[in-house]
Amino acid sequence: MVLLLNRVVMHLYCYKEMILERSDPANASLGGFSVINSAKEYLKSSVQELFLVGGPMLQIPTGRRDGRASVASVVRFNIIDTSFSMDEMMKLFSSKGLSLDDLVILSGRSSITSLNCADVLASNYFAGAHTIGSAHCSAFSDRFQADSKGTQTRIDTSLDKAYANELRKKCPSSVSSSVTVNNDPETSFLFDNQYYRNLMAHKGLFQSDSVLFSDKRTKKMVEDLANNQNSFFERWGQSFLKLTIIGVKSDDEGEIRQSCEVANG
Image (tube, rainbow, N blue to C red; front, side, top):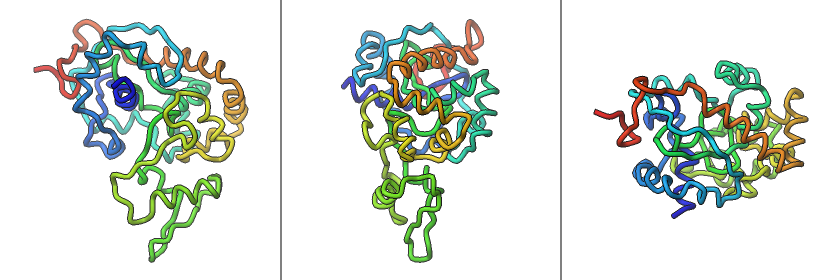
């Protein structure tokens, strides 16, 4: 039960007035909406147990209010697309008051939990693949090209050849839209720094992952995080605290939702 709730919480985050609308194409892989409210109640007494997946403990301010509107059209402008370049990601992070270091650290992040919908649901707004989770095949299909017979060819040479072959087997041209692939091919159920080791091995699932290692502005930081998990945990905590105070609503600006899926009344 703890692990199930942890997975659900790690993929959903009600940030500002956006609840990651299911109608937005970028959120096609999101599931577990039916148990979010149960998770909310469970977390009130069991927050710390959710870190059984190996992540660091972190005390964060609680009580941020939920937005009064959930508008799918707003979501797209606040999410990093899996095909984003480094400059595009930096622009979005900068608009939120986050630095280049925050970009690299939060790309390998997991979640934090608290009490209200806006506190309980985990951030999935800013990065490519993470240390825990999965993605639909369509999320990285731009790294391959299919011919008239459906045979796929790796066109993104920054992707490890053997890893690319694994992805092609799991996601052939005729694959069902429900099929998913682990973001981290090595330790998909652990919150650790394997994500960065994957990047060094050219096994970042998305283009927005791979660019963190190929770009000279962030390559050294990826290497440092890959070699020091304690440093990753410490720095992730600092960056995540910055993330939690973006666009905080208080008093009459927001509400505490009775159901995380919809605004009250």
